[in-house]
Amino acid sequence: MTESSQTESEKSPGTDEAASPAADEAKTIKRLRFAAILLMVGIITEIIAMASFSPGTFMFFVFVGAPAMVLGIVIEVHDLVRRWRAAPRES
Image 1: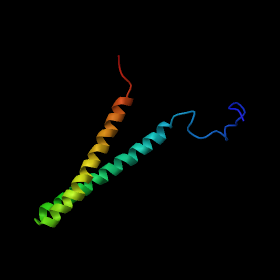
Image 2 (image 1 turned 120 degrees about the vertical axis):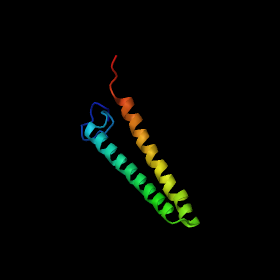
Image 3 (image 1 turned 135 degrees about the horizontal axis):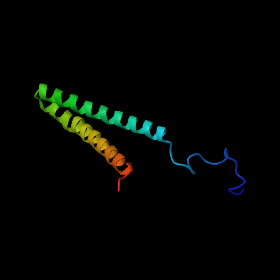
Image 4 (image 1 turned 60 degrees about the horizontal axis):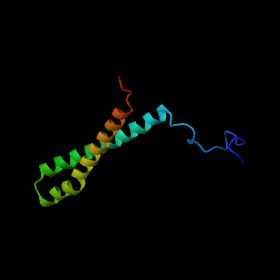
């Protein structure tokens, strides 16, 4: 079967056109929500670690809280860079 004989329903989705702006915006919102949740988890574990000074809570913060905060920050910065690169440039 040639390309010209395929109907629209037979073509695989997303091959000819880019994702719609609404779908891209929805993905961005989900990604930023996830980053915000990671940051909140990191901050909460930091507060818990500061409230009770014990080696266990410190290790919990080191292995759970800090990586969650770093990952949340990386996701947010990645999204900012993507938006900055996609923004139209003025000449």
